[in-house]
Image (tube, rainbow, N blue to C red; front, side):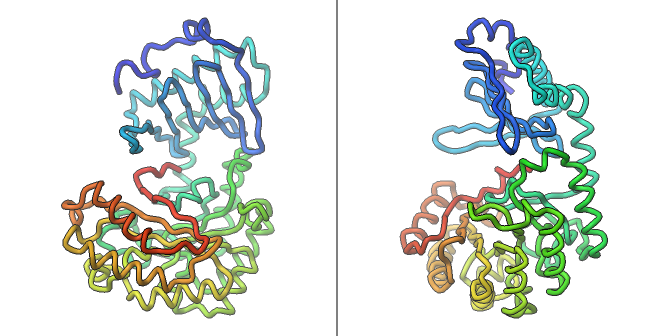
Length: 388
């Protein structure tokens, strides 16, 4: 960390002398926002958990597992860097200083919650979280604020060459009793902070590896336990979501998927990756483009929305044309529409080392320009940005 960052050497007393206005504590349904004009903004949930600090152009986010990340823009590109243990400690100290500086001006129980968290729970809360969620590998960007409930451990396929999230984790489906106990433990852990969550996401890699009656029953139960989170709302939030592998959808009928949707399941996220079958084999991705299309069509027939992930850069420059052509062809045939997401995910590994960031940008532009919009939302899905 550079010595001129706010985490090193900045004091609240000197900053407060330059403050053009008084500190304030804003309150929302999901949490609080402490604003010190001209100095900093601190966001935290209703259980006092600090979530972020914005100060002097620097943004720091704290994950539920206790990791802290510095995020910034350089030349129109976002960069993220995890803080070292010493930097993490300095961030904690900085937050303590900010809290001390505003206490004469802010009288609110929210500030007391934040102070208790920073002073007494900064480390223990993260350890408690990791005991309940040993691993949250990745989530779709629109589900970063979901309550994650684990229905499986690991990945049933676990052979994709580009994925390292589940390599050392044996796959198993949890029992219904385990999942319901996990749900109760999750509710107790989050406390009032649960109000900052917007939906329910069923982890880990593929909830559709479970049997249809089991998953349908679980979603119905979750809607009773977590009515605000597990019930789809008219404003687009709420409901139950999960990753899906197209091969697993073979075992699901349209009526079963329809029952799942009626229970409250809203969107399945499918790693399409590429429409080129030769490239799929290189990536060790199961199934063919035809099988993927059948699975997507089945989901939409049942009224379940789609979240499709496309890789940028698989196969490098030599496979660029084949990847773009076949993927565009598959996406044109797919039933994308309003309520769906199309994500482009940069692949950064040895298989794409000859593919630059500029190449990835151009590849995405090539695909998007060839795809007429049908109302789906499109966005970048960079796994390096993820922090739960």
